[in-house]
Image: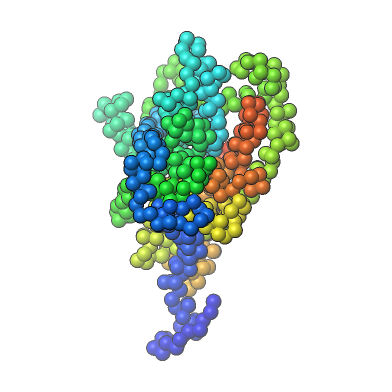
Length: 315
Length: 283
């Protein structure tokens, strides 16, 4: 601690020798504690967002000097001048992901309600149900690729018992996105389930008793008494599910590489494909796709922050 | 609770429920069980089309031995450890400080800095991809574990700060005030008063970050290539290319790659769930 303190004449004699740093430490300390983390975060996360905006205005292959092209990358995206049927297919798939991924929330609630009992061994059941979330998406992707496999996958083996199939889920342009989303829902449902299990633990038993006396049963009980009390859990489930849906990269990359014929692409994958794969290093074009994805996300981020801000003000 | 506690239900329903549990669990984990079965089958079962029948011989030990001794798998696993552990330490260390700063001090920019961390934590990776890759190249850290670790630490600091700050806010503030009255220096308050109380948060975050980073695939693909630096999530794809159609080995490899976070979860379950569900009950 360096205390090269300027003379502060009117200061009480006892405090003077403690120096400038000591006297100001309460206002300085937060900045010193923040500095390493915040700087790191600024350099690796915040600045790159703005850099991406900037790069999206250039044509750049990552090596040779970048050429300023204004908004032409966005124009190309809008009219699909470069890749036919890529941008809008990705955008459409992103929306399908967003909507269907939300099924993880009711599904998680359902499993949580099912498991919210006290019988012997229930704790082990709860952890085993949660299991899929801990496994990496890469492995989930592989597991489901085999699950769907038209020659030996369990799905088709089971369909075969009923005299149906075989369906090549991942090879069919119509089913492929839904197949991948189903794979993604598996860990995501597990996550929502654990959120709700914790939420259910905190449900107020008196309110349930009161509801029961008033004759609330089954779905009415669930809807009017339980679900309102689960609101914090639902909020978190919503946040993580939306983020999960828009980050859907791993599964697509592992299961289909965006295929067949690009029909399972989403913006996250399309961007990677454009900027960093054998399709060439079109960094500017990729950045423009990333910006579109970011703007979609920004709507949700703004909503999340706004809700948090409201809670902070209330506290 | 809801639905009606099973103890109060008729005996018949109790038994049905107990019988339903294992069935539901098997259905839920079916895709995984299939992979586990694949991993102990011999090669010949796949060529003869015996996919779902009883394994003709149990080759589990042999399959896993081949994964460990005849492939790059150990290398990838080691890389994963060398990437994950420093990231956990770095992110937890940085965020316990930022969390302390945002949780204890009241100053004007507090909430805005906090929101910066939260918002940054939510952004899609793709918006960072080109600049971060470029930055890593400029630093000469492309295709190194260090490059990956630095980025992971920075990015995870966002989530960890959110977590730590909320945890510290819930601690009794009187402790800090009392220490200040005693004239305890601020860094000592952090080190000797707050940090010991944060042990549960530190444990919870460590397990969570371990899992997140171990399972990361996107950044592994963007910032590294090749067996000398790639973690196991990226390595498994080259492993699978090497053993194309050797389902018994690919299954064994996948299980090996998935195992460390699973172990972590079962060993530290309480902390893990406490971490994931922070905030799920407040309000």
